[in-house]
Length: 513
Image (cartoon, rainbow, N blue to C red; front, side, top):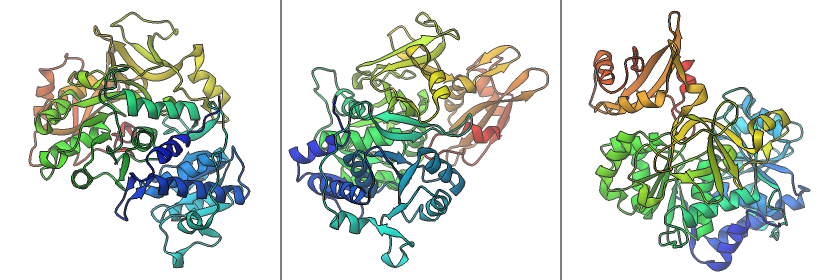
């Protein structure tokens, strides 16, 4: 089947050419303007000898130039390799070399690191600079804005649905990052699912994203969550993307009010930040119709308080880089249910397996496995890792969960986060839910630390809400009333803020280190 992910932009540009597609401090772009800019970048790539299937790396934060370069690369039939803008040169060089990228697009925020990395990779021959002062243009680099004004516009390249469209590198918590190969079909259908099926009952489609809707891109667009759920889904629907360079709750609230944002997607720490910032008012968020949380479990207490304060239901979804990313989501009329992530998305299957890859009955805990149109082709040049992740015909997520009495999936924890204390299994999320129930706690994470007698001990790391506090002993006593004796934390560390990754997820790896 012939399909190019860039056709979602082409289709919207044909249907609604004069509607706003991107909103930025520098001004808006219409769909026609965005589409033409993407096609001109595609024409530039072809003119410089970049061939279909070649990899083009983008180390660009949340600005319209990311979207133009992303779809321009796809228009040319090439593969997009989005790079985390917080990486250091050594990490960037590894991903450039591993992906065999021959072209790199950078931004002033990332240029020093990216160019240093590119100099270590002989095959990365051409650099394009977005939003650069022409006087500061690096040697042999081309100014992106000039290219998308003067290059010939290219037609859409023909690609197959199962061709690789994007290579996204995983976080590398178990070694070197691996590049997940996501297909045109998987990403296209994921965008369609978000736009048409996630906010209403199919086939009624009473509530769907549509022209006039605006999504705030606070999540980094180099990450699967922001890329699919905001950029691709909004453009698929004829809506607009509003860009935020880096998440800050006050700035996000101001942009939501300014741009009349209707859809906000974020990780739990973003909802916690909006909830706890005294300068964020319900009036600023009045235009929002949909809120989606993913990337980690949303604490029950946070979900309930957010709804009470802002009058907004928060849908919970679930997915991974390897699943494009959407795999499972609550319907909007079921979003009041806390602690669950809903049912598999349309066309996706999910089950709970034991350690021998046998399906477990409802209610029993095991590993979540997934199959469907959304699953990656594999890890780029990693056949052994691919075989391990895709064994038995299912993608093995590494997440522990179960199916409840309503048929909804519930995430318990990551397999690698499980704490075994004196022979008892302690799932950190259960203890974290207890911590979030304390009125002073703003952020919480639970990890296992070595213990000579018990093997592992339960440790809580917390940060307080502004103007509030408690002693470690008070936190322990609070948890004793909510979880079993073998589960409550014996060690409590209090920080000003917990370490977070680029999407805002709390980094338990950093806490362990």
